[in-house]
Image 1 (cartoon, rainbow, N blue to C red):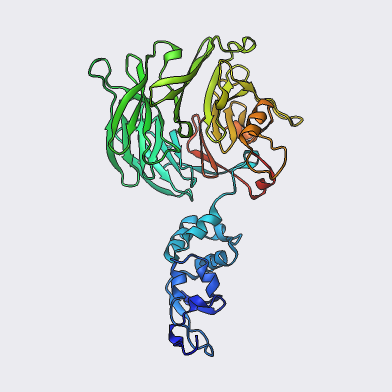
Image 2 (image 1 turned 180 degrees about the vertical axis):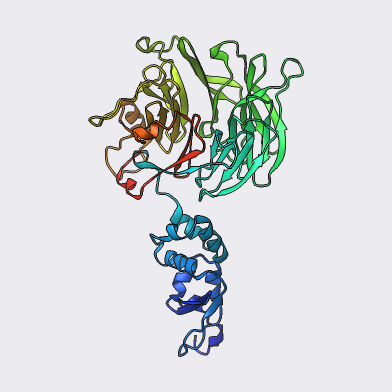
Length: 492
């Protein structure tokens, strides 16, 4: 506007204007647009709010007393959206993060350091996280959004953030934690097969928040109940935490716990665990989209495996579906080939299981469950010379991002649904049901045979675009990610 005072014109309104920075004695010349790309609240963007000098004069350098070499890397990030190829060999992630936090551009750094979408066919081992003491993991809980991980080892919980940097360890009063779930961003729910109660710990603050115990005034035998499984992942802040409790005389149930008040509601599915088909659940999943809780228990012995799966409606306390294996609902051809592990694919509304004798993987569509809803997966595009999957005894199954990961003696394999047309995106519900019925799946081993020889996989958790796993008798947690080329593979 004519007559406007030029002293009120700032660099922020001139994206192509030159800016000179003196960082640690080294001069850098860039543009306003580059500095603003770090975000409106960044320190670099704030430099653009100063009055613009006369256009005929060279811009005077703005001095910043920080490391010039790391700043050069961050400036390259702002210019291209990528880190230089030599950045991680010259600087640690922690050094980069500290400088990015100072400049207020941590969001750009986080985006650059985040792995590409997790595609099991192209996943490789990128790191192993080893706690400083008692480094044999007993339970895992991954951050579903950011790829962070909490590791229970002995009676401790160690936290690793999105960059896989260790952010702290809290020592609990438990000797060994065997069940672990993230309730809030900084609060964990933990249980032990050796000690009674469900316990809440502030991992960042290193303090005990509270405990919940199962009691029944009408039955004094119900006391000192231990926790066998917890379901809290993928839930909102107001959703209950579900925990399976088991007393010493094998009475068991599922309790819904209010995480705000730490009060337990009515017992769901109370039963006596004297038989395998009434044992305490070893896996719980809160199927929040359908308002249900999935519970599964499996036992093994000299005569094989036996167990059950149930879907509970926590509002009524009634089971809306269940299956027992071996049982009358099983195919006679597969009688005795009970499941060794099972999990729920919440995104695909399906239940998957791996059978102990044959090692076969089967799926049941949650939209049409019945007496025998299982469809056994057959590989459409089997590669010549692929190693045999082998039996399913001691197998671990985990559903994540429309993929089914199975850890077995032969190694780590992944099953994914095949899209008929690449780039078509997510299927409709009808197309998904048809794909399940048509067995439109492909299978491949994620690891190499030498990887499998490191030890039997005992636990798996998906978080962000990472897969975390621990092995029997092996220290540390393995971190698996896909390479940048994995986007060439189309998956559901």
